Length: 364
Image (cartoon, rainbow, N blue to C red; front, side, top):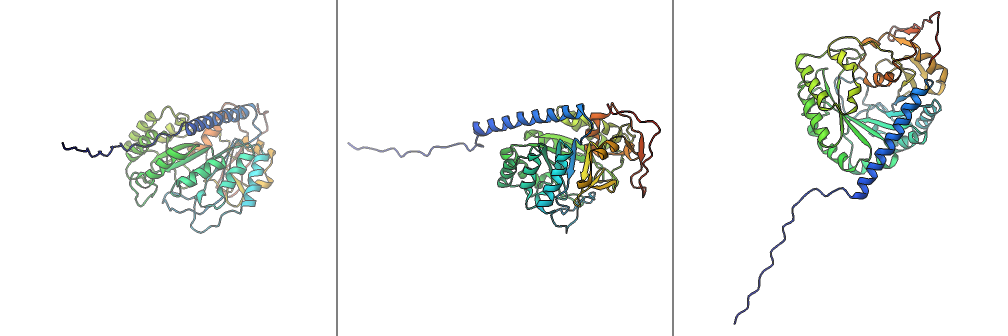
């Protein structure tokens, strides 16, 4: 009698993406809930009182690793602002009661002490945000941003394939987006753009679809000219812009109503609260209305007082009707219904033109 043996067959295991551990998923949900509560609290505080900034953009690094042709907010040589000076500037924003502090650039990920900058923002009680091109993100870097307490990140992706206008392409950045989807505990928004020399407007729709598929929020913006002013959309651009807005109507892009007029080449009737509810602090530590209107008021943040915030709240800016700077529009929307402005200034005129009205009303 002969015996036979059966050779064991190898077990075939399907290769699938491992599920996120329940502990990580629970941690993300908890952070999202607490972040939302803090955001609601900041909005309630802004509605209750007008004597403090709601949002400030602060630049720790003017240098950038890219050179997008439409951008005028970078160079290729600047040193990072020393960390002790960044601490002082952030603390001054805290002194003013700033609710949201967003780090921009240049490229902020080039700053060697960025994690400390984020932690200092959180120590003031502010919500910490960052705008980045995403090129330098890796899993370990994302985990460090988690540990520092980052609340929000925005990445603008300009096209599907890199070209002479912009290297911020989906082809290059898709792996970075996948890393964020797996590791980031903070909220991520992907901003696509039309206008300003973008070769293929249809790319904006592709970028937005990919962002939503990865679980991020998505917005679309209109690239402004060198002074932050109106550039109306062509027919193809407008078509894509409408489709992306319909795709993302559940996200906070629904608050970008002002862009409807911009897309149509029409001015907006609004009260710009730059210098008050919104501050832009450049790498030299000066307060400006925004990235496109530097020099006004041009005051060091160390010298900026609540009185300056109140004055600028009531100051009408001549550049406002054709402005496309979305963050300023969104912040100013909080106060659109109150406090008509009784002084005026023309940024870029060579001198300030503050002209007090004979009548002033109390800010409600």
